[in-house]
Length: 119
Image 1 (cartoon, rainbow, N blue to C red):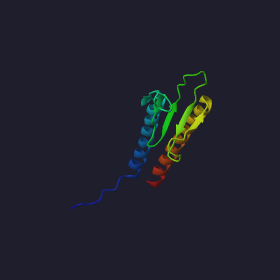
Image 2: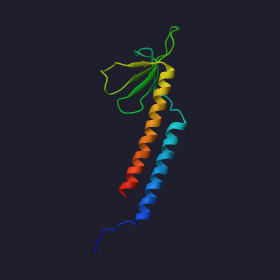
Image 3: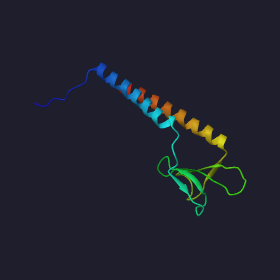
Image 4: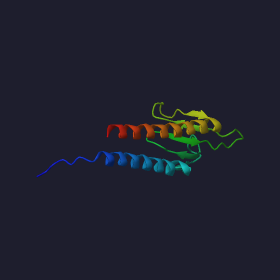
């Protein structure tokens, strides 16, 4: 005899709470320590210096200029042509990074709320 077991509503609610707590902890793990570069581009590359690949088809790099020009953060994302990059001043890059973190936390909360409401 095979019957589908239905979970008690309080168990479903508690599992949703635990999921939200775990998502928060994982978010802390991902954001408390700054990631090391995935690689260091050499002088033969168009932009020598540290390179991060945070998500598929996204690249973030810092040009390590040989001259005295100030370093910039360069971003390439999937909606750009080949080697096009967006140059950002470090303070702008920080604001964008913080906005992305805040938006990710907000999305986690919405997703957790949706899970609770669906149960």
